[in-house]
Image (cartoon, rainbow, N blue to C red; front, side, top):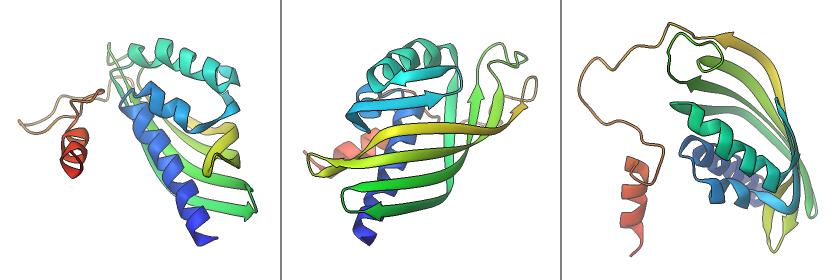
Length: 164
């Protein structure tokens, strides 16, 4: 059962990376074939959700999802998980509140084992609070590694070194 909980936790982390790096196929892979998502501003199937993200996420300069508390209750091939997190969103212009905000959320997930792996059958992305960060973002203070919202991000270069 601890292996199941670990796999479910890793699924949540994979989702966050996929959103932050704009890896839409990886986002879709988190959901069951008939998965459903309920987000602020969206309610529908996983396929519709990914299509919505393809329209919404490019309007932002970036996102960073930070996961905290995570509990998963497993019952055979079904589970419920609750994951607390914070998501930072930024865009241009930097003083636009709709593009520059931080939100506290909980992913409340109903999961199923499908084709031998855990997937989200239904997700409630519960927004607990939102804070405007408009006008607060600043440029980096010195040269150094920067994130990229594609396969050019440093994490993929290192992951690619793991296997040929």
